[in-house]
Length: 365
Image (cartoon, rainbow, N blue to C red; front, side):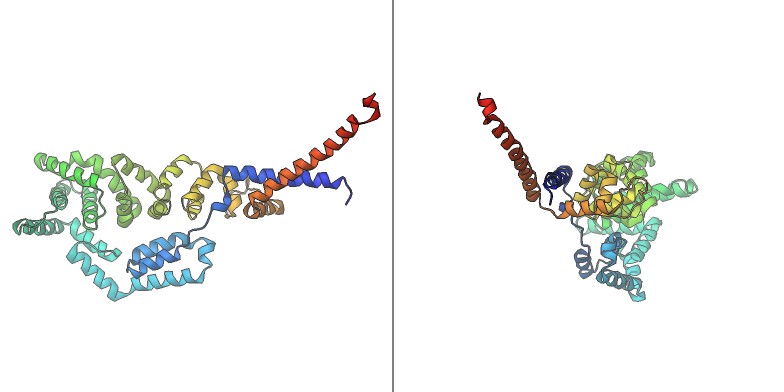
């Protein structure tokens, strides 16, 4: 190899090394590991939580790394077959009707419908009244919601349906209490507001509290609303979840779950990033959203190799693929070694001529 090629090669190697190190300083793509949904799905199936299992696995199933795994398809089919079984459906329907709660959609529907009618409110007040007579613990939140439900039913009839959203929200909350998905701050608020409503015979004081709940229910349904609701800490956060649901729909709950509740903060800080790219980044967990924010949408999508509609801005070509390969595989220690050795090489090349120059007879005279 001609001597001229050695410094050129070293310069190219050093430049590439510095570029990789610079990008890793921003965010090291090697830290990203896809979430494998199969183990958790199996855990949910073992606990007979088929609705949660399908919701969780369905979140990931559209992505190739999960879709191409035959086991994921088999699990999803097994879950669907179980949920479509007539005997299973009948059992869950009766469960919702008699107990006022169920883990399955058809059971939730029967519980919700019975509760939406005044029958459910009377039933629950009777149950809590019996608890009181028997000196058992009375659920004050259920009592508060049932009394509000009766008042809302009367108002709905009187206003020819105008207060239906209020009645719907109350039914959502009562169901949430029965399945332990009401946060403590909301339970306290409901008891306080119910006392005010019963004194004034009006539901006006509840509008600010119930409006975001109805919006959530209208956008993402009962199950998703309750899953989001249980994670709220105050009314402000509840309203912010309406924004999240508007952007990510029924994927909002799993999105929050797999990012340890940080998804809303990241999504809020990236208003112009496509929702589908945020969802894909979340398949790496919170680290994926962190990488998306630090690297920017275009570079992140390029680095993880996700197929996205960024045709005008996405980098193309084999050179980029090769750089991606180096970025993911070459150890940083090797890159630092290349930079140091190149530096030593050029120092030596400069040092020898300078030493010879200073030791020449011409300078010694």
